[in-house]
Length: 438
Length: 136
Image 1 (cartoon, rainbow over the protein chains, first blue to last red):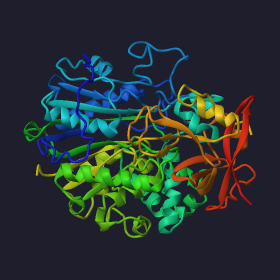
Image 2: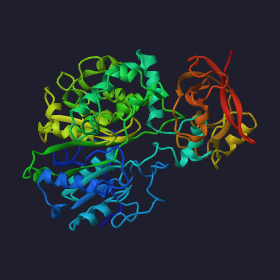
Image 3: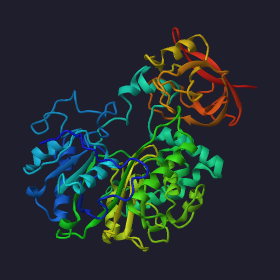
Image 4: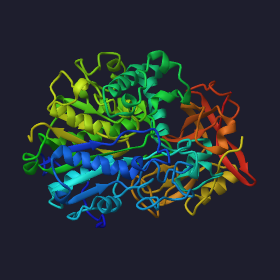
């Protein structure tokens, strides 16, 4: 079954106060598929659909729940392999396969309806359509459970990747620029978070001092943390540790943005099981409580967001999160902001003032000890840069750190609260986890 | 330099018509007295819909920062790589910015902070775009 998504669940305004379900919703399980560079077009056990089913089964096993107990399925139906255009956008016109791979569903697209059918989830009563990316989807799942729309909810985020250069087709192959693209594309901006953040990043270096290469310690530490994450792409494919020399001599994409400032598109899926705090206490794993979720969608005032706007937006997002969680910067133990492009992470670090880092201090912070063993284990997940473009490492690591099961990545500092996000400064959301409900 | 060709829509047509006449016009809100670019159906600041009018601006600005596109995704621009992409702030309202490839300025040789003036470049027969050139 699929239900039309008219549900108002977002916490995307200033001044909403403490979240009404704070500590009453929990994550009780998670599961990851293997992370491949691309689907090979042959292995039917490695399709996006197969990997999503596998991730769901792992999440259910982790929590100790069975398929008949699942009454909510939330799955983002827009993926890397989807509307982004180009040879990687869809499987067609190549011939399809036997069911259930006789259309794009299961190959380049996955949604709740497809998963419910393949997994025989017969008791689902909440399966919204038009679901946003994991950035906001975690908030949707938490709110739905808190509001009682479902009690045992699988939230799935598939990220597909087929052959071909990333986003080199579709609109980017067009000689004409329509709609909002008429204001950017004629001059060479293909659109994306690389462009959104590279100009403010340059302004950041001018305003506060520093150079682009001062990001090297952060990028290299992300790769190090990734190699400590067994399920991630780097660790599971024997990718060697990135060095400073590798980084500073790597090729430019949007100079000064280098190839190693960008994440690696992959084929993977992950699932998380959200439930009520009360039910989670009887499940297999210790509950990881949701202390707040918050979203934002800030409108840029002109062609290109500048540093002032980026700082204002991230400050507002931080205030919303802290207000809803009833916590402050000093209360956050684990901090896993988005790093899909390395150039945006400093904006989040400074806005949330994690470990006291103020505006203009991030590059100096990166030069200190940010290893997981050290006093400032920034981005202990390794993020997208260290694990591939799954956009899920930040959430999984936060859960593992609070459970105390992060293995070689387990931080030595206190790990009772965690902030995680796949978000850009302008759009997305944050979620705060707690080892304790309050 | 074969640039991608803008396709005017109902809101942007007056702007592009002016550009094709080598004039730079922006929306001005008579209610809150602010300029707006890119054009929209309503004022982004006060939401007025019937107070927006077109106003010609002098077309002077400064280079805030820049990047060099070495491996972009736009098919039509690939032969141009590497090329500058500068962020230009408008002198009459520095919160408004534009992109520019800075014609006449070699890649990587961008004088950040320098003054620029608007110029116009034909990207298709009869279709100009606004560009910016460093004032020597």
